[in-house]
Image (cartoon, rainbow, N blue to C red; front, side, top):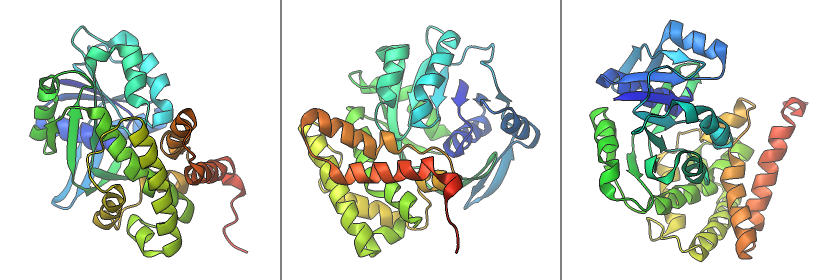
Length: 309
């Protein structure tokens, strides 16, 4: 298949390199010329427990002439609409658009722009950390679940097959929106807290203060999900969040990575999404409001950070 991977961050480089290694035709789409030049010159390097590999993945700044079979969206949630609008002219009649992004609204934005019938969504538990431009540490393997909201499971079969052939563990699912909410609640409990405290995932349940805030943030998110009629993919949300903290104990959450690089985070689409949905439903979400405000305050004042006395 002909893949266009939009966004050469950690996940974009991981997926692009594996698909290219499997024999697919893969192109990375970037908006930063210096990064695109670097990847074109040095390739993409993936550091894995089984060993490292480097592979050349063509990286472009403009939409390639060849029509993609698959467009894999790997940009941050706040970039989704702008990226999607720029891609409308490159779709063929059978092009499929896939998002495995964090946060709410990505699936809906893509469906609005490209049409419900060609958009697949899902979640991935693959862990990746961007070490440097085009250099990714594959921090942990996990399952990737792909489906189309309201369409048959079979609509995702070819995509699932491509992921499995590339060495990922993937399967098709129904009710992908429930899974997106399931991952959202895990991110609600972990990401903002790591960004604020600069702690790795595994420490959050061990520190009483962060554990208490986590419990309340998750409780609010679950209340909103239940009010929306979401069926979560686990029976005990808080225990699931704690389990993820333990299984990814040494990981730097993506939001913490953004803060350390002084970049915009996805907090508005994670904790902030809970606040917005809660407002619509009349459900108070004060802890998620505070977490959102604190992370956004960090973003707005990066140059003013005091590192030492």
